[in-house]
Amino acid sequence: MKLPLDEVRAAYLTAQTVMDMGMASIDRSVLWCNDEGWKLADYLPCDDVREDALKRLFMALDSVFSRSTGVRSAAVYALMPSENAALRLVCLSQQGEGLENIWEQDGNITDVSLACRSAQSGWMNVASDVRRWLNLGELSGERNHASAAQISIPVCTESGGVLGVVHVEFECAECADTAAQAEWVALALALSEPLKQLLGITAAEGDEMSELLDHVASCRLPTEWGVFTMHGFEEANGQEHVALTVGNCSDGNPVLTRIHSECLTGDALFSRKCDCGPQLEAAMRAVQAEGRGIIVYLRQEGRGIGLINKIRAYHLQEQGMDTVEANLALGLPVDARDFRLAQSIYEYLGIRSVKLLTNNPEKIQTLKDAGINVVERIPCTSGKIWKTSVISKPKQTSWGI
Image 1 (tube, one colour):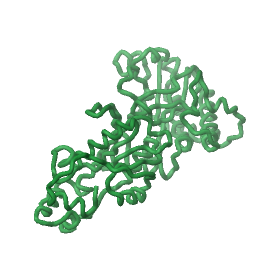
Image 2: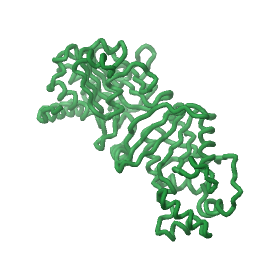
Image 3: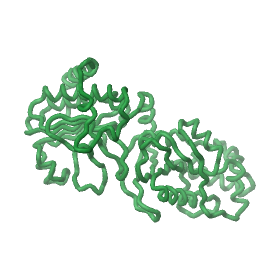
Image 4: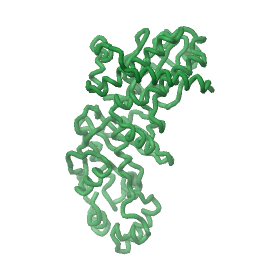
């Protein structure tokens, strides 16, 4: 699909002009929706900065809606962490017939919405014939029968990180033509800055987060210790990382966490050269017992030097070197991990401070240097201490866990 660029540009400038006016008087009850017990204020702090952003968003949405023909409903959603699901879309403002205040992005939810598809993929979705989409199983749920056509457009940072979704439902397919799509795409482009303000993301944070990692998908992960929500992230170079969450981690309180660097030998092959596997299990148990927490699993094997170099280093350790000496002998850094990746994951999931599960006090300063607010250190007790002293010496004497 190719939209007329001049029309998109003109509509974008119109939306920006409307938002920059900012002089209209709008009742707070309109901005801070309270719908039969559902309150937007339960999801966003009620401060002046966010109220100004809501006002600008409301004015821009109202302007496009009032100029449009055949639009049944239109809403702007913010993408936020969920207590029980992977993520959710929270309605910030809407026009026309009522739409959902919350859309959970959970694989267990039977109704499939176009808005959630756009939030998950980061792509615009156009259902010009909703009935056909329903027949194909691409959409499901009784609520989708109310409109003839729908479009959902992600609101993104400059680098492509999804902040939310503009969702529009039409009375007839002809109303969702390219001219209408250009208007609504322009609105989504213009709403990037207000959504950053509402989500508490500065321009620099949003750009840096998106440059480091993109959120790709989330799902439920049943384990021996309980059910987690697993979030998948990807760097620009294709490297993948995951986070396992339990409960509501975005309520502003410090979150129990472990930042675990991948260790194939310890996590999956039961090596006794380290206790990484038992510590990962201990962290999973601790988070489930807490009922709230996150395990960040960074794919930074061998403290960032990679699996093959780790094997080479193990070979030198067997000859008497410790971990630091082995790495340096191979011309490798002592620690090549980038903990800014963990900070990006915390930012994405709305986590502002953490209680860190680690046995290494020195790790706290390293994480603080990466921008992570560590308020407490909690020892990670695995209950397993290997007796092979020659093997355990390098890890204990060189840098801890």
